[in-house]
Image (cartoon, rainbow, N blue to C red; front, side, top):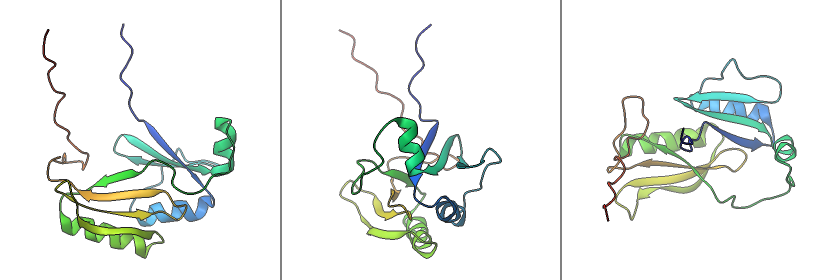
Length: 151
């Protein structure tokens, strides 16, 4: 039996104020799962779970120092069907407590994107990528893997 392929199942964001962060994501349209309890809030994002957990507890669980500010070397991306949807999502994020990092614009790679930060500074790119179609669920439909040349 071969090892299963790596697959993101849960993305957990360390947050400073669990209530504030949960309210932000609920205002963005996510629905809190009944699996949420105590110090963790979870949202089903069509097969990937977005979890919110207090930063100090998350660091403790991972066995790392809780201190750390600035660029965290990752972003989350939200792909939408068109430019108007990107502009609307970006405006909504700001209206419910997010902050503008980089306004939506025509991107060098041929799409349209911008960045906002949630109340804890987690960066979200909101984009329309004309090269990646969206499934009916809104999930990205990447092209299939390239065939490897046989030696």
